[in-house]
Length: 229
Image (tube, rainbow, N blue to C red):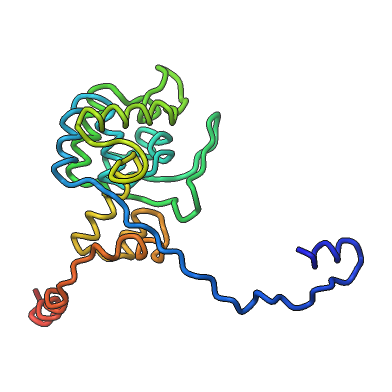
């Protein structure tokens, strides 16, 4: 900073050698995240069945989408049920939006379970140009406050503690659930990172402890390859 100021003023900086250049910062260890158990997810989906909350929550838990990514989805463009894919991508127009980072621009395949929930959402008339209608005939995205209210009421109805800290959960916990279940199923960290739109380093730090530690099962893949199975 001093060098920049000096150059702008036509002076020479007093400090010519950065004393911090070779200092290694202490690593910041991230706390393990909380996520839903499968039975909790089933109960959560049960209490919101037949409402637009079902699709909203499913996009977090079964596709790993962030809050902003969910509310900006467009029917047939970002949610393509024919191709069975969710496209997280920027948009222009009256309500322009960009994903969190360029890495966040991605395609997420739609699983069978998610497909049933998203299709029901459309069948019940909850989708317009936007996948979540805020006002009939308007392209305005659902507000974050409305999404927060939907999430809180769903969690509380299902008997799940809502909030931040401790064992309480929020909508972002659904994204953690998506990634945690994939890690527990021994899905490669690189693939989880691609689905989340995060870096491999971040995903490794947060979710690697959930990967199965059975190395014997891992090397059995060699037997299958040799046998052609």
